[in-house]
Length: 423
Image (cartoon, rainbow, N blue to C red; front, side, top):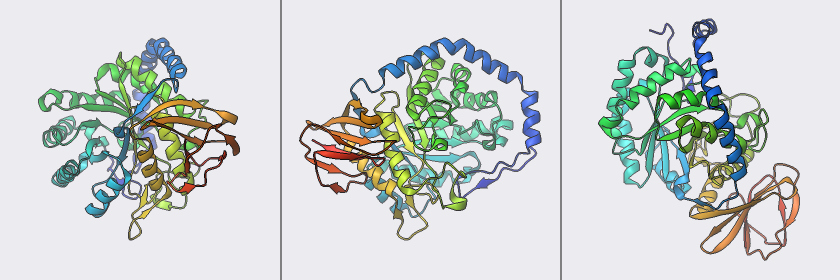
């Protein structure tokens, strides 16, 4: 049994890292062999992964991609506030795919979670449930399996899938090496046929796709998932170790494909940018925190880069209501819609049911063209200096990031704030 007590940070919706550093260090030394097996698995899959990555980079944004309404996901917390307000905001956002978490240590709330899932289904939303683990679950596999059995039995008809585990490659979430996660995931796989459920995983957070090959060989997930944050480098176009967000997405799908031995459906089940000035409510400190306008800009740019790539089937924003990073601020009455909420709502309304057509990159900017209802429109921005751009065709109207109408003109100013240009 783990010698330290699990502690939850209710302000940032994540655990405190209470495990002593010395104990974690000893664990890594005792289990050094896991790093060798991880290295061996990546060497074996290195050539096909690199080939898949190169193929993805060549193919990205060069084929027409249908943008379905179900590609836009939004996460919620059942205990975030008044139920009616949550449902009203969900409906207003335009999202039809909803994700919420069930922690293994909150089994006494399963009736509440069940009622919430039923209300979502009745309101027309399709739900994915993320199942959270803690260190105790690694040591008490029978209790973890009993928790899974109970959840699958209750929710199999209310959820389209279950994400097994969460951000487990961070020790504060209770898993200290990939073999421990495999044991948790295999417990879920053993119950799959009994309940007829679809499993999603492995829910690796950040840019650590080298963990995928041995896990995907050990566990068959119907959907591959990643919590693909890029906030540490600011804008999604910025590079980390030479990889921008779109390059990370190409690498993510390449690792998933070579590890699973097939072309899997890949989702991003969590992403956000934490907000500056929110103090204890921010899940990160320092550089990842941005202003509300930057968050709204980055949200639209990330979704379009992901969904138009043809590699990512769905993206969930974490989450609707949260003081430190949500689309709305629940500290105010009524809840205040942030610019990111208006940006999300406008994006979903404009892009749902469209077809991505092509990408152009004038002056280092980005112009993504879409077709909908027989008409073409573009979404344009730049991560560099603003510039004036002529589309060389009549412009019917221009809408800002939040749907506000702009005066049409032949030359359009392209800056960091996405604009919708309708022809």
